[in-house]
Length: 142
Image 1: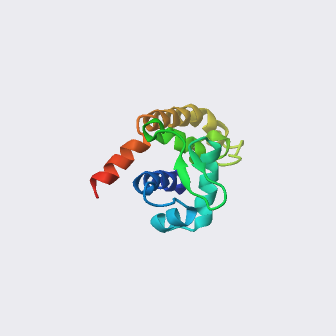
Image 2: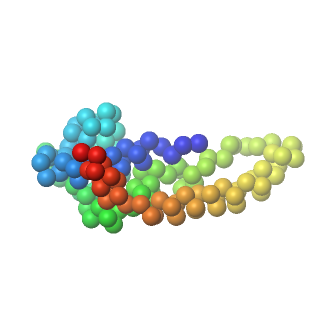
Image 3: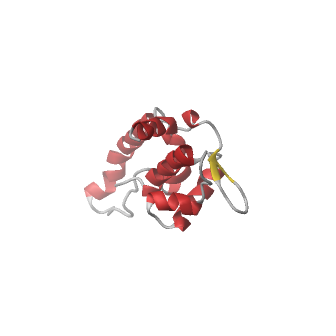
């Protein structure tokens, strides 16, 4: 199980917006060159982040900026915008366990609450970190 790479790509995008935003127009091509992915992926993520109210994207020639201060954008905010699996559940449960097998018939009962608690603990931890934390750590390496 992994959280989609969309999450770390989005964090990278925010770091670039903050590091280079005063000197460059932050376009999907610009971000794609830093992240080393196709600009189409960046445009899709920018759209998701914009829908979540985390970035603003200028029409026409483009240019992305953060929509609110980076110390107010948590990892959890980004995760909600781009990282969740369908249905909002981190763990995708295998389809149709056997109802004939005693394990298959009871696996949901045995796991569902535990997996929910694990997801909640991870999400609570994500709320402790902001984009500012990442930007500060990256800038310390310049």
